Image (tube, rainbow, N blue to C red; front, top):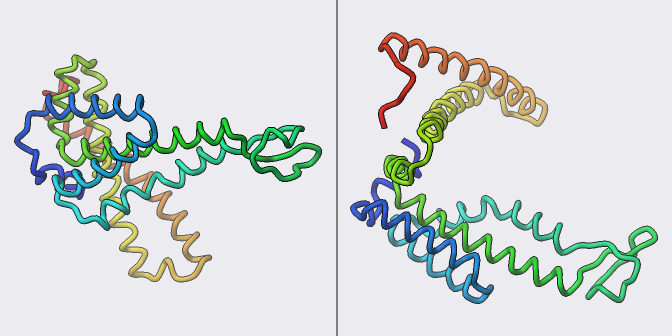
Length: 225
């Protein structure tokens, strides 16, 4: 079981109906989308504190999870802030860039601030939902929302394959580390290439074995949900 599943099955809101948690999540997303940055900052602080308490996780662990998507968010913000124009007067600050100027304008800066805090508040809302709703309840919510059965089955299979993938990565990497495969930059690149190649082959082998076992059990093509 993944650590995120252990947390989800041991949170303080486990007995709360998944419908209520789903509705609360949608309301929080709408609130994050249509409020100003000051309210979004408040939501980030409140939701983060709530998640740490309800999910029984430490602040340090939660902060690590929060920092994972931060580089992608900062790159997106930088791509919005920076623009090129021939007139430096339109920028708050600018530097020469070939025959034009690269700088930051007031309008784009405000847009980037709104985007950053909107994304951050939506992220904290999502963490609260994921850490308090086990995967079984997520499938139940998808079924209650009358989503296509094929979509629910694909979601369930993808979730199952995550365990297969992580298990193969753990076994192969430990085997390489015992043989000092990651000592030195050259060996690390070589070991990583071997890991990816063997992982690709063994994952397909595991999937094939699963298909064979399903056929032996007279699998009809539909998973019971």
